[in-house]
Image 1: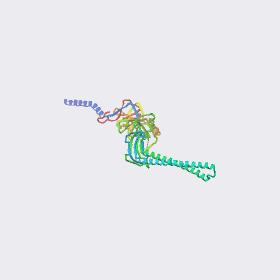
Image 2 (image 1 turned 180 degrees about the vertical axis):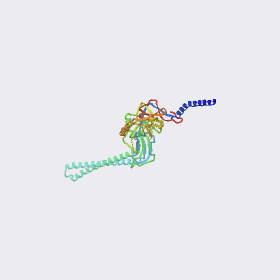
Image 3 (image 1 turned 90 degrees about the horizontal axis):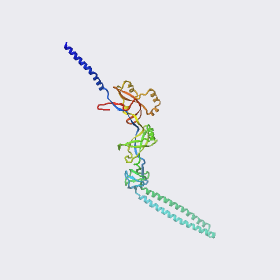
Image 4 (image 1 turned 45 degrees about the vertical axis):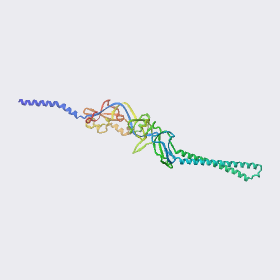
Length: 419
């Protein structure tokens, strides 16, 4: 009997101990199996909205220098990246043929001038002969017949006409000489502007043939250190924002692959209206001006541009990672699970109908209803918000039950991960 009683006491004690340990153990196991969430905080600060694009760096002006005459290159005085002044000799074409033409045309001109002197002398002689004949005829009409008088008269007129021909021949010869002198001058290839030689397309000894097309010899870019252009292509959906940014004088940031850690700045100089359509995508060229004092920007570089189109200061900012998070239904409290079955924006039927009937107006409206998720016991709770402008990291919160510093769920924790 005593032994049975002892057994019952021991069993009762063990049962009590197990019962006492059950609740802490169950709570521990429940806490251990509870999902651990990665979170990001709501904060206050500045948001800068931008439009991304790519473009090509080009000089403001590129002057192509060619040759008007043909011949072999006998001298070459300019090289790549050389700084030249207006009038500097860049190259010379063999001038011997053109010098010979000049000498020939000078001789022709001298000959024509001498012919003018000869005809002038003959005309003077014919004029005096006619005057003497007129004087003699006045004294005695029978001394010189009318036929002889006509001969003197028309001889003078003929020589006067010959003088005009000789003078015209002088002008023609003068024009020929000036043409030859110009062609001789064209054998000197000079720079028409101050600038840098960014391309040289000839070598010494090369023969040029300029009969049909003007061969390109050099490309000179003036004032590359003062200003460069970036030609960007902007989608038609964003061009309105770019126009507003130009009106407000908002800056443009860009980077190039040559200096990935350096940010360059510019301003919108021109928005051109000649659209380009590629695979049904319409884009417009936007010209961005930037300074280049260190000549770091080379023609042809590819620039990644960020056009600032709007800015908000001291606004409530929601991490974009929280807006992208989409939980499983098993992790969401029962009253919010309907949000996962349809549109996460959960607009009312009236709003949905309004969106269908007035889609264009809805597209223009940048304010959108969204949901973010916060911890609520063992489940997640949806918080409806209205977003404004956005950048790469944050979106503006226009309305919603959020406070500065509040934690928003952005995903499940993995082993070794932290907030």
